[in-house]
Length: 235
Image 1: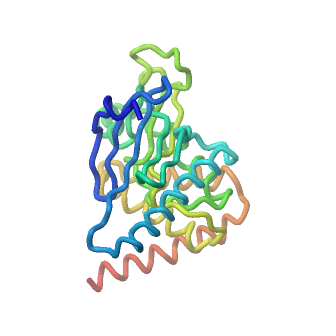
Image 2 (image 1 turned 45 degrees about the vertical axis):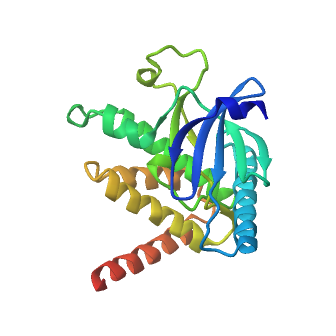
């Protein structure tokens, strides 16, 4: 394919390489999963195919859930790739909080972010989408309008885009939803411990967005949290 000549590596993680290029005239992100040499080749191919399928399925399902994700352009099982929309104007919520939120001034943008995260995660769970890796690195802020100028971050007209569904799956289990919330809480504690109330604000927005099955999910989350704390204490 012609895009091969213009591939630029964006990031390399434990599971995949991310490239950016122009595909069919559109800014595109390619996620290419590594071959794991410690696994039998047939097993590795089967596991990789399954994960690519799950990721693509979750992205498509998000559209029904009214959750923004990168648009899916192509799934290439042979080359272990997913081609998707690349947001040229974007910043991870992790980087936004670390570099742009002014703690001493009572910055209101953090409350906006907490509301966006809580409501978005609730939409996922209402549609039985378990993300599996809820961290602020896997959430992008993008301008609501493509026409926003260079100061779009200050405008407050922001949308949240969920990314990296590599560990996602579809399940209605309240246990899995509770685990998803616990993963998010642990991620916030380790990355944004300067903002101890952030998770409570997110959870509040999560609860307010929909009351459907909420008591069971929160109860499961508290069970998972208690188990996690016990493991931490025991070591």
